[in-house]
Image 1 (spheres, rainbow, N blue to C red):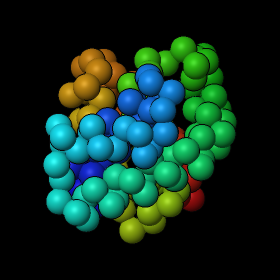
Image 2 (image 1 turned 120 degrees about the vertical axis):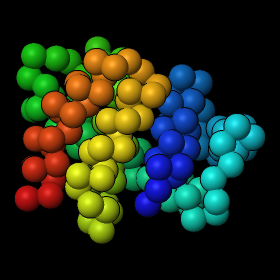
Image 3 (image 1 turned 135 degrees about the horizontal axis):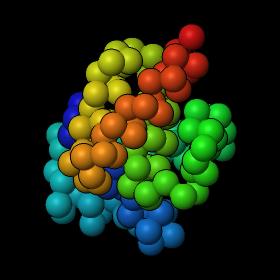
Image 4 (image 1 turned 180 degrees about the horizontal axis):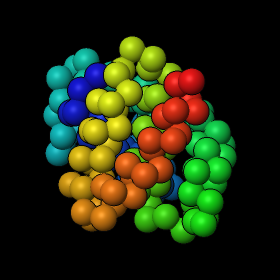
Length: 133
């Protein structure tokens, strides 16, 4: 599991949401801009597939955790970050919890705002405890 794979996964999921397209439609273009090694690419694709599979569960966890916020009102990039983190925490038990949280916080800071990093941290920490209990 690598930063490059997580970053590609974020690009893919975000583009799918913005364009209402499938993974197969957005992947070729994303690979023009981000060219991770084959293992990172494979990880990114699996992570997006799991995020799609766990969409309802992620939304449920977000609603439970961010009680004063409706997840549909989160910034789209932040929601994508959180959905991917939930997918990795749920489906990749070998990924160290702290590493997953730290890298998704960094992605939120890089692609959203500095306050998004704090927001993602505040939401992910209790979710990780539930998912990894």
